[in-house]
Structure formats: C-alpha cells, structure tokens
Image (cartoon, rainbow, N blue to C red; front, side, top):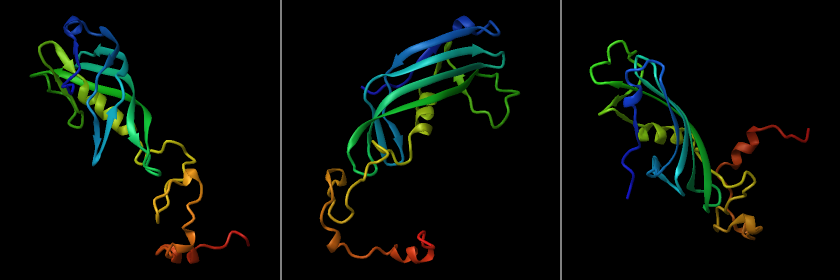
Length: 177
C-alpha cells in the first residue's frame, strides 16, 4: 500500500506562541518521481527536527534521510542511493492567509494536524543527483556493444565507427605543447 500522508498533530501548540513539537520518527514514503525516473525507498525514511508555532503559522524544520533504489547512469546497474534532504514547510489555518508574502508557499492545518509528506518528497527530490552513479570511477558500458567496462575492455574498439563529436577535438589545443 502506498502511503498517502504523514500527519503531525499540532493541537497542543496551536495556541502557544513559540511552542515546539519535537519530531523524531520513521515514515514510509511513496516512490519519488523525477520526470521518467522513479526512485523507490528501500526502507522507511528517518525524519528528525522541530515543529514550531511562530504566531503566523506552523513551521517545520527537519532533516529526512532514506535509501532509494537507483540505477547507475553509466553502467545501468541498480544500487542503493543514500539521500538526505532538508524539510522546510509552513502551514496556516484556513482564513489566516492574510499578511503572508505572495511568494511564500504554505499548506493548511486541517483538524489540528499538518501533513508533511509533500514537503518531505520535495526535499528528497531536490537532493537526488541528475545522473546518479554507484561509484565515481564507474567506467560505464561500451556504447557500441553494451559490455560492462568494469569487467575489462570489451574488445570492439577496432569496429567502432568514428564519433560525430571527434571533430570537436580539433577545436581544442593540444595539451602536449
């Protein structure tokens, strides 16, 4: 079953300016989707931080960490990708939006609770690399035959047609000079 939210009860701090709720919990997350890529959590995410009544609303300041199932952009092997994000969210009660700057994003306090799942997913999405790799020295796969170059040379170099980008090498000065 896919999680539909992560609610935090804030009734105890709604009427107390400066009051804080400490947040330390594990939560089940749905997959994080970025474009056509989907990153499925390999276990629960851990979140820690504080939820504070600022008078203008409820502010969440927390850190979330999780391991996601990722695919190396070089060799196409699956690997666990550790991701940590900073959750910053602001919530107000319905009818109390006046005075909030136009550029401020906010959610609503509903029935004495806030749902931070969207903010958690956004915090993780920002931290996922554009092209994740399981190791910085991953050589990837051969573009001609698809062999995993981590296992050694593929042996098809002689048959490889010239790259259309070879002409760009002529634009760069030789480093030997």
